[in-house]
Length: 252
Picture 1 (cartoon, rainbow, N blue to C red):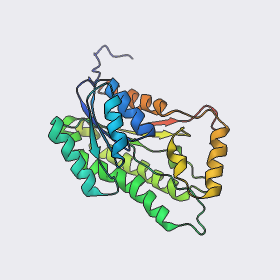
Picture 2 (cartoon, rainbow, N blue to C red):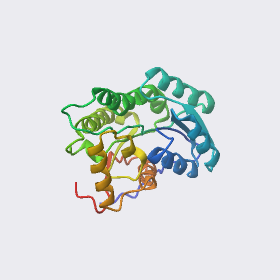
Picture 3 (tube, helix red, strand yellow):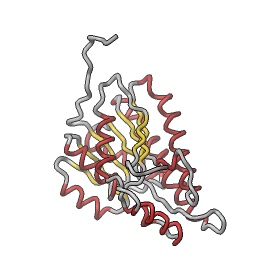
Picture 4 (cartoon, helix red, strand yellow):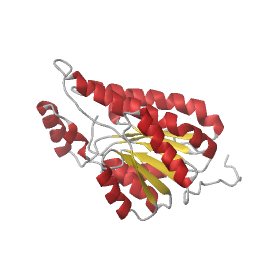
């Protein structure tokens, strides 16, 4: 039975969001989409030259924040800078990530460490630093994961492990804060046309990734940015907890 009670749709204009991994790909597209929707956006990444270019091209107010998610001190300092400038923090889009695929046998474990530090611990650090402000604002946390957080594939064992971890952490977070008016969304994109695959140093894994990309019409970063906005624009009593988004042509 439908309710006649009016729904309250969040007014995004004027709110403040921090996007990590904003120097390229999904992060950059999301920052631009949020800015276009009227949010004041803080963009965080290590490549500050790219952040400056993004700041200049955005339609609204954008703040560049030098930020390395593998360092908790860097993340906490970045969050503090955002709150100092804007007086609040309503949203966190935790997007920073690296993909260094390769077989387990003979792997360079420094690649494993980098993926764990960036994809998993970096996501946790961002949430931990931002959470008190998000709770105060009854805001929204969006965690960008991957279909690799649902299905592990040959050559992606450690990358998948980090993304499975992000999913588990996000669900525990949701249960912790949902009664405080905070919404939590996990977005799991399939193959997106970004520079992520260029991180791969293993030749066979890089070739496999290129063949997969060539076999389909890949998603574009803007497709995922639209998914972020979709989740954030829902009425306040609606929480989109997860969005699994694949290219139509992607089988797994």
